[in-house]
Length: 150
Length: 150
Image (cartoon, rainbow over all chains, first blue to last red; front, side, top):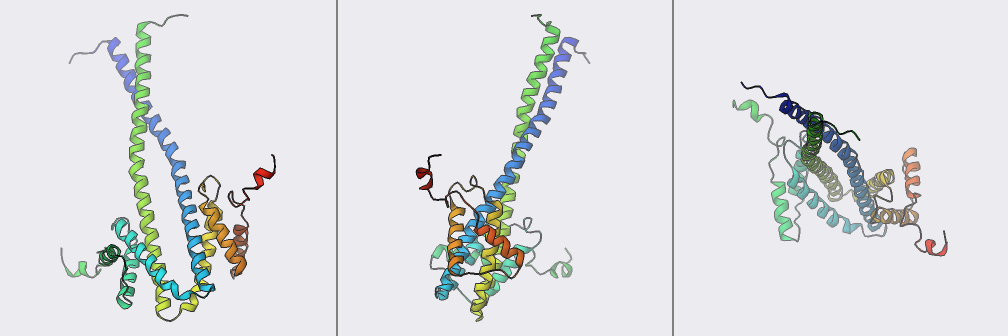
């Protein structure tokens, strides 16, 4: 093996040391930069969500207090539909390790079986049907894995 | 100014080039690593929020369908209280550049003025009072700045 001369080796080593040090510093800098940014995004999300909830619940309550409580079920069914669409769009068994989404879906499925409701908007009605039919991990019988020997 | 010899200058330059390149690569690597991670956290948030909404709206609707619609206003007032607490906790004028939170708060303030309600839990009642009294940017009269000459 040919040994590299000192005049070539030292700059190469310096370059490697620099690359390594720079890589660590750059990664650290970026991590520090995105960390408070993520927190800020999270707080902004909480604020915008709480603003929407404040508006929503105030409007429901105004309807009730002004004697229009009969309009409420219609609005609540729309909100249930939109929650089901969001749930189905984002569901993966990995994201739902606690089975909270699976239980919520099962509850909605039972409710809609007992009190059928369908959106007036055809694509919403269709998507909601698909969402309700979604197969989730904990919704499959836990006994199944002990009876089959796979 | 004394000129550095080539044998010193080249390794220093190599070190600097390495540091610069490494810094960029490290930052890029970290950004690439946290980017899909943030998206994943966001999707998880949407899933868990939609699961909670699905449960919540199903329960409201079950109450209505089972003839207990009279219990709904009490539950909606609790949800309005909790939304107001979240809003007040996270509000800053910078985060609310569109004034959505300010308008939501103003709407809730008008509603509670017309239909007073107070939580049975003393600290919640107190915090909600404070939330409703929160000064927000767009809630301050826009005419004020043109009449005062500060």
